[in-house]
Image 1 (cartoon, helix red, strand yellow):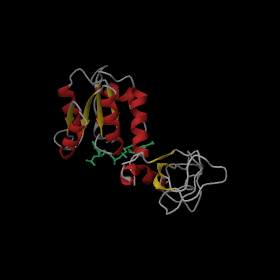
Image 2: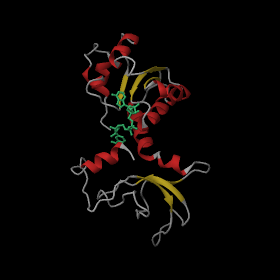
Image 3: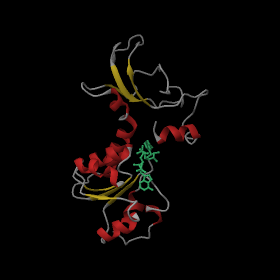
Image 4: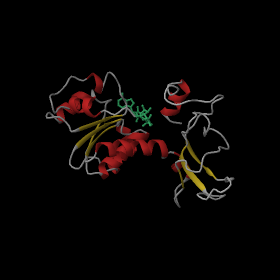
Length: 212
Ligand SMILES: NC(=O)c1ccc[n+]([C@@H]2O[C@H](COP(=O)([O-])OP(=O)(O)OC[C@H]3O[C@@H](n4cnc5c(N)ncnc54)[C@H](OP(=O)(O)O)[C@@H]3O)[C@@H](O)[C@H]2O)c1
């Protein structure tokens, strides 16, 4: 279950996508192809697939179900050999969102990138993609996530539970950072920070914050 599922259940998507009721929730999926439509060639019965089924009308392809019928062209792929289906199930929405954020910010080579919420679903992917893109990633996570973040080769870690995040970042980077990816949006945290100048991290925040 992801925050997106909770948003859909709360009704916040109805204005952007038509919905059908009774609504079956769930977008990410892993499963085995049980049946294919006439003339369908992309998948075969027995294929193990994963992907994201967020297809209008909302609720028509909900994946909190034993069976789901989806168009052949849906964003689905065969699970690569050796990948645990439970791991594949965690990839679609978080992975695509993390990739989309990083691609929208490229080129990132040599840039300092603060990722708030780096230890979450989207943040874990965004962190790895940003490191891969050559960024110097400052990962904001609790201490318990530090080891995992180090394994992603982040440059720096800031723990918002040790001291206020804005203070820590401004102290370590008095000239500001280049890019802010805010996945937590705590109004008392990053968004409440006073601007630190034209190149300050608050400036980066205003310019680069993405609503994903
Ligand atoms: N538009 C889209 O397609 C799309 C897709 C996916 C996600 N999203 C949105 O992106 C956001 C993140 O999603 P997610 O799946 O990564 O959520 P998640 O797995 O719940 O991760 C959120 C992370 O933020 C951290 N966090 C919470 N409050 C914080 C604070 N005050 N300061 C610093 N860090 C804080 C959490 O750390 P702790 O657990 O340690 O507190 C957690 O690691 C959500 O708002 C979600 O709705 C949008």
